[in-house]
Amino acid sequence: TQLLEQSPQFLSIQEGENLTVYCNSSSVFSSLQWYRQEPGEGPVLLVTVVTGGEVKKLKRLTFQFGDARKDSSLHITAAQPGDTGLYLCAGHGSSNTGKLIFGQGTTLQVKP
Amino acid sequence: EAGVAQSPRYKIIEKRQSVAFWCNPISGHATLYWYQQILGQGPKLLIQFQNNGVVDDSQLPKDRFSAERLKGVDSTLKIQPAKLEDSAVYLCASSLGQGRWSTEAFFGQGTRLTVV
Image (cartoon, rainbow over all chains, first blue to last red; front, side):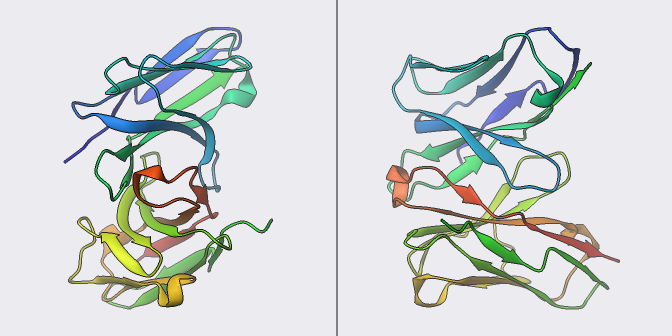
């Protein structure tokens, strides 16, 4: 069974601080995605990483996919209160069914 | 482009009652997912359809949960009978591709179920 483990599960920081969220697995994933979810809404895709070692930047967010395609990280620079939310990593398994599974999520609270 | 539509948004039922949720995915999306999400946790995949066939239902409690996707479009998820631990948000999502070549999953707003 493929599992994705996120850490930390909860993060409370002050505006302007930097943070990193990790997503780890013992299994290889064909791709990993990061989603952000706000209360009362469904998750919304931030980025998809496909190639081992890939780094993608989205404004103040930097996403990295591990060389072995088993882990990923999300780094936020100079966090703002608008970054508050639940961050989820998700992966399509390497089998042809492409089951999309999620990590348990990281709740981020950015205080002004 | 219309998004994923789910109904109802909220539902309160007593334990042992039955309930059904409906999902209309984005037009043309081959893959449809049903997830169960406990507050503050990541979504747990219940069932994944590819067109009108089931590709994974390994975490669906089949003694009480059932789902179907007629004609490869709309889908319904049913719980009968409901238990207190079924209280959660039920999310429906769809994606354009198939299998591990599926791309972005688009989510509906979910149905918040409370079992009392």
